[in-house]
Length: 447
Ligand code: ADP
Ligand code: MG
Image 1 (tube, rainbow, N blue to C red):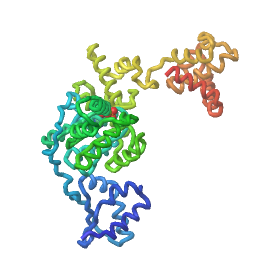
Image 2 (tube, protein in one colour):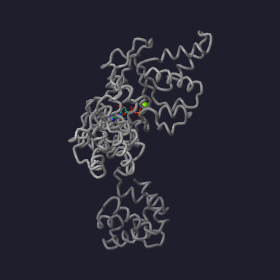
Image 3 (cartoon, helix red, strand yellow):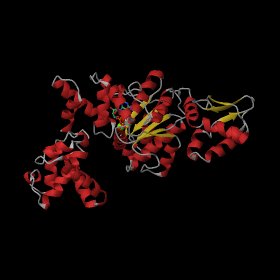
């Protein structure tokens, strides 16, 4: 027997410390059974929920049971199909629409070559769950995140897997631009006499078992397209067909009518975050393997740290460039080579570029508008003393040169003079905003 009162009590208690929306999403639909005496069982709809609850809530639930209900026993989470139709593939006989063959690049996007980690783990699991046939649970599945983080990759990974596992299902994946074009074209054609017929024709066209629309943010602002999309969406929803939508914004943030947003929010939404440097390295290794690029682990970590990339597409671009550079020159991929290959195109983090002491001194001279030769001389005129001290300070802080070496660039000054300069700028910069601003400008220019 399920014990709803007990479950409500636990939910109430857990909501005091945990995010209520998340509790409602993850825990509210579950059921609890505590009448076996020795063990308490929580029933959830599938493995995805089970894993998540075990990871995030199980310890707390145990504690609440023990402290508030005096039930100090084992608690287990069991996945059962609460939604009976959930794992069955949808019948496709009534659907006249057909799957379209995937283009070659689309076929390459699979789960096998998708690296999952903290930044995308959630989206990955949900996509996998859909691809494995949990169709009505995550409907629509809405994946969002900035550009180049793997949304399209996941979408086609679902398509590829569903094709393999459920060959009878009809699938349609398209980006929103293509969708818009199709809709407009249909409306423009004169073959159908009235509007109603045309809309019905479109509905038929999109009446597939799995419909995926990429980058839905590009649908915004085009009224006819939006209306048609809403129509198609409702039609598919009513027929319990699976939908997957990607976007650069969450349903809450997307610029669309409220009825659309609430429809999206009614399904399952998940965000992909930018990858950490470990994840970037793992992705680089995966790409290197896939494209047969000789890249050792150390180099993968080096690139993960030093490439100026905000997303994975840029990271891949940098790897390709380094590879072309290396194979063209018939040399190994090393940090030095990567710097050569990437610095001109601005694909390397600026601060990682090797700056020579001369370049730094020139940048200081330029910014303070003093002659380079005066700066490096022993002159003690007011106008060069300060710039010289700043240059010494930056050579210590940024280039990590020894005091003696720094002195040698300024007519062989002894190390105590250099130390005095470095220390005094370090001190002054703390409350002198003007000085701090100048130093920042030099750094930007030189590094
Ligand atoms: P988005 O659609 O979010 O703009 P894409 O799916 O087009 O991004 O991904 C950009 C590139 O990065 C693709 O080549 C894709 O294969 C790759 N990529 C993104 N995420 C991953 C990942 N987790 N593992 C492997 N490759 C990835
Ligand atoms: Mg995309």
